[in-house]
Image 1 (cartoon, rainbow, N blue to C red):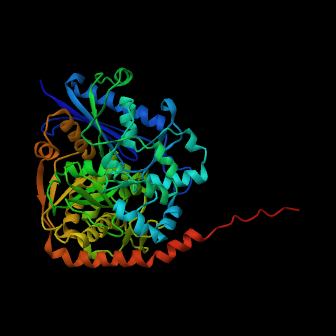
Image 2 (image 1 turned 135 degrees about the vertical axis):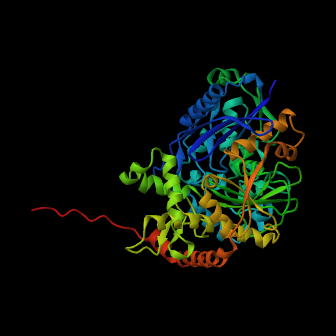
Image 3 (image 1 turned 30 degrees about the horizontal axis):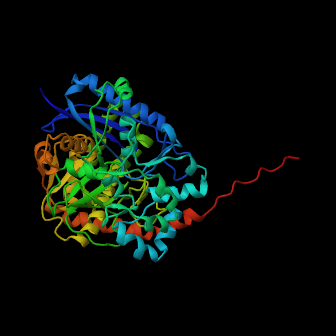
Length: 523
């Protein structure tokens, strides 16, 4: 009998379900996209009823397409975007729309907290992280001010990983790698921290936080109702799961110190593991890693490959000339890479800030944009600037990690995610970083990484390190062109200076209120 693992990954815009054998081979997968709701500026939400339907549909479809006997699936595990907020009331009632990790409605709240000197003495030494606007703390504080009736309606505070697992098992819980990334978790005590809740003014919400569970703990079993709706075998064990950054790191085989993992997608994820941590001002996040005694140090922001998706969807998908050249959406991305191939790095100084979904500029109200456009700027230059801007956003994060650990680039970079579908973009990453890239043979990072938690839970592997040794394969290495080191460093410095100089402009845009003129009365 062949044994299988199922990984479920809920990002900000899609649900992915995949089945793997114990060597990491993907047997089948299903992806279903969900609608992002943006009713107001800075808001990104989703309909949770739709989310539930989509997850059950994707599970059902992948089982049908794979022809795998559900009884041969020995474990299931869930991952999803970190942070955001999903609230459940009594008897599983949905309290309000779910809030995605690209939401920025609470940026004013965060600015006040970070400007309070007590943040550095009372919060960071406990959380080892920097609070940001779509974390539960920020969103709960915003809800208290703007939707005060929500508290009394809520029984459980979840992140998306915990929500999906709750729907599968009817058992509440808050997984530790997720909890450790919320700025509500004390890294020293490995528990929620009441003093941190009090600093944020949300101490009453501690009563709504579920019990903490570990990644590879058995957190429940597939219920009869879920079995009937999905085709999964009733009683199949479900693991605690993982935060997406941990799942992605595992999918690249990140098990050694001084090794950098980069994952590209909606988020620019740049990270390494260490057995020792310290308080570092402005470090994005330090979280628990599922390998015992290890922590994951992460620099991240929503500034990666999804910026190209935005450009294609906004400017290219209805372009009649492109539609003549392409038969489907994926061909348009191939066409973009072919256009970039026509541009030499020294031929264009066009700069793009990849801040469509958020930024890493250090300015909470920063937005995306091109600098250096002229009447002769070509579509190829626009797309090339997007490719470079994403590389530079990743590099800015890695520069911060190097200040903590100067050895993090001593070995080849493990890279995975959407940009690995483009040979041109991969080579650009290698040239910008001037480091070899080890390409991981994986299509769905989150699903593969979290399936390892199911493997450890079920006893298929004794630990996560063994799971990666069995399930992660390095397919090839991309080497940098040393002759391009100088030109890309010059372009990176242009990018950094442009971002710095834009600060006043962003503040002016944020604070300028445009008034609609009154309609003159006709006599």
